[in-house]
Length: 230
Image (cartoon, rainbow, N blue to C red; front, side):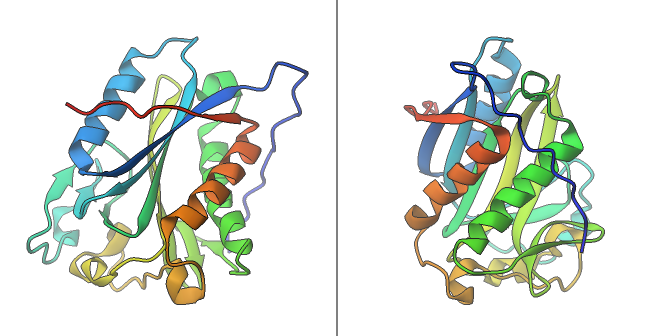
């Protein structure tokens, strides 16, 4: 088990709590959302409010910057997209919550390692709300239950601002994970909340996960209209 010393946010004075706009994108293909994340990050200024994007993706394998193509074993009819995040290959598909925190780490005074710890902790705390005990593992970023991966991380930080994020398995068909070496690990077991006695729908989990993200980063979350994808 990996120790991750969390430095939780200091309570801000009245009116000083940073606001993050929450955009629920529904179900979307991967690439338009990825391009929109890039555009948002490139265009934002020191005054741009942070955003949290929730999305459920159509089936896709994504391969990170250092990803090795040999970890994609038998993609079949599922597309493979090379992307600009860290990490190896993972799968996104229906029944999985993907959360993209678009945060200004400099403004929040959070380092990259601390950011990763807090993102992982949000998944761990969400699972604990359903009495599912999860943990980190040495040398294998993400969140695990009984040695099986339930939450994956793939991040990118540009000029102190984050994009990409986390994938949290809720009620998925896990078969596509057998077509890859998940996160570069041959034979890695993968699980989802419904298989552990948790909820069978994303709507029950989304507000809980967002609530833990808000708490861990000291944010006030305000619902907002999602961006358009053209």
